[in-house]
Each structure stands twice: as structure tokens, then as C-alpha cells.
Length: 231
Length: 274
Image 1 (cartoon, chains in turn red, yellow):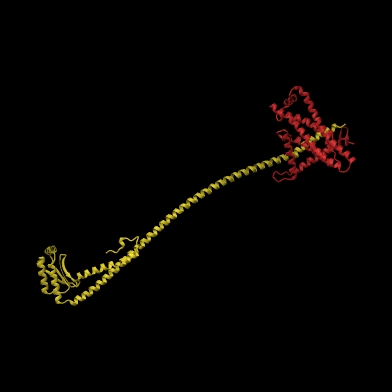
Image 2: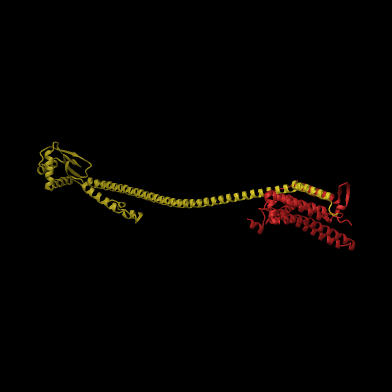
């Protein structure tokens, strides 16, 4: 039994290989980009617009609102990164209803890559917002003794982010696989529907956590008692 | 091994490419469309607000104009009413004056008609009476009557008041022309002499006498000098009669005029002159 779509290799040349994770990712990327291109090529600025445009507008404005609610006052700056994160994970998980499809998010490599992106993006946004020194100082708060703990916390939360998504998606896949061998009728369908819900929840959790990490890195936009005490 | 590092790197690249692709084809166009729509809606709302303000302004202006119009209409109506009343008053006054004038003209015409009729009646009556009297007197005119007339004339001269006699004496003295004696009938020589004697005696006249016949005198004798005269004639009686008849006829139509005139507006001049 293959635990990860990484093990399904289509082509390999030494270190370089094309496995199911990459192929399905490309397929998702193509569908998302082409679909966006098709829908946005006929955008209407009037009050009458297409259903697809309405759907995309609802999704994007909802993501913006969620980002803003977390504490980032300028959501459009982070929309590209966080929105893509959510849409990719959600779309990858929704597509599990397609027979033969292996979600890339069921690969620890993919979740690790996404967590790595978050791991890099958080300090980048922090540095852009408050400068390198200002951002580095935040690791020594409340005292410099906390510096190693903050660094460890940064790494472990990234690791947790990757493993959480991978574990949930992989476990969902495995449960469905096991159930198919035990009770091949009806019950796997229910679990697949449950898996859709779980996948969307995971996409939401992954994105919200990434947003919270970025918001935490924004010194002047940080919300809560910590930010108030800083002021 | 669960993590394939090549796949990790490839997925990072794939993710970054996907971020760029979605930013290029999804976020930017959708956000631009939303912004454009919001701007358009904001512009439409602003336009609607402006139109609403304009409509409100026009409504206020219209209301103000309506009120002004009502006021103007009311003032014009009251002015027209006053004008109509004054015009009505004027027309009534004109009509009254015209009717009064007409009535006055009618009364004047009636008065003239009455006067003409009266004169006509008087004239005819006089003429008839004169004609009858002349005819009767002419028929009765005999020598005796003529002698009586001369005697009556002489008696009358003598019976004059002293003042009259004195005035006539003065006139006779101042006369340079002969005294003129007019009579209806030719006087006999004795009659002429009797008249001359009476005149010389009463008026102390020393001048000449000139006797002439005048048919205008109705059975009468007239002695005149320098515009002063002494006369006796039946015409005097006839004149008295004419006067009495005229007065009687003037008094008679009075009730007729009174009936035609308005009692409230009757004026003293409306009554015929006596």
C-alpha cells in the first residue's frame, strides 16, 4: 500500500523525478489557472454578471474578510499568498471525489513545501513591515532569554503545520482505502463526503494558521493584549 | 522516507508559480472588477444623491413658485374684483347719469312741447277771439260807438294820475314833432278837435297833431309823443283775456308733469313756470 503519492513515480532521471504528486499538482494548477483565465476574461463591472464571476468574487471577498478578521488591516497585500494557499489546499482536497485522483496534500513533501513557504513568508512579511532589525528584535521578546525558544517555536509550528495537514489528508485516504476492502458499498461514500468536509476544514485551518503567524509577525498590526501592552 | 526533497522543491516552485498565475488571472482581475463596480456604484449613488438634491431643490423651487403663483393669483383676483366693482360702480353711475340726462332731456322736450302747445293754443285762441271780437266790433262800429270811444279816450286822459299827467306834460313840452293820434277808424273833424282840445287842456300841449288810421288797434285810440303814449283800446281787454287764458293753461298740465317725474328726484325747476 502506497502511503504517499510521491511513491507513484512516472518518470525518473537520477534525483529528478516526476511522481503523482507533481503531476496532480500541475493538473490542479492548470485547471485553476485556466479556469480563472476563462472566467476573468469575460468579467463584468456592471451589476449583471455571470455565476462563475459571482462565485469567484464571493470566494475572494470571503478570504479577504477572513484575513482582515484575523488582524491584518491590508488584506490585499497577503491575498495572493494566503488565498492561493487556501484555494490550492481546498481544491486539492475537493478533487478527492474524482476516482483515481491522489491529493497532493496527502504527500508530506507537498505539505512540507507549503509549510516551508509559510516559514519563509512569515519573516519576509515581518521584515517588509517593520524592518530586519525590528523583526529580529521580536524574537527577543519579552527578554533575550526567549530567543531560542522563539526560534524553536517558529520551527516546530512550521513542522506541526506540515504534519497536521499531511496527517489528516493521509489518514482520510487510508481510512477510505481500508473501508473499501472491508465494506465496499455505501460506507466509503459517506467517508468520502466526510473527507471533503475534513479537507475544507484543513484548508481553512492551514490558511488561518498561516495568517495568524503572519499577523503575529506584523509588529504594528498585532492584535490582542500583547499589541496593546506594546503600545 | 516520507519526504522526497526533490518533490518538496518542485512543490515550492509549483506553489510560487501558482501564486503568480492566480495573482495574474484571478485576484487582480476580480479585485479590479470589484473596485470598478464599487466606483461605479459609488458614482451612481453620488449621482443619485445629486439628482435627489437637485430634485429636492427643484421641488422646493416649484413649491416656492407655486406659493408665489398662488399669492399673485390671489392679489390679481382681489385686484380684478376691486376693478370690477369700481367699473360696475362707474357703469352704474354712467347709466344713472345717462338716464338722468335722458330724463332731463325728455322733460325738457316735454316742457318745450308743452310750451309750444300752450303758445299754439294761446295764439289760436287769441286769434280766434280777436277775429270774433274784431268782427263783432266792426259789425257794431257805428258813429255812436266811435263818439263813445272818443269820449272814453278823453275821459281816460282826464282821469290819469297827476304824476302821469305831469310826466306826459313834460314829454309833450319837450316834443319837437307833432303828436301822433292813431285810431282804428277815421276820426271826424269834431272828434279830432275834441281830442286836440282835451290834449291841450290836460297835457298843456301847444304843438301840431297828426292823425292816422291803424288797423292793428282793435277799436281804440292812441296818443303818442316822444315815446310816451296814452291809449285806450279794446285790445287792452283782449290782452287781459289772453293773459288770463295763458295762466289758466299753464296751471292745467301741472299734474301730468308730476306724474311722469320720480317723486324722490323731483326738483322745483321741473314744475312749469307760472
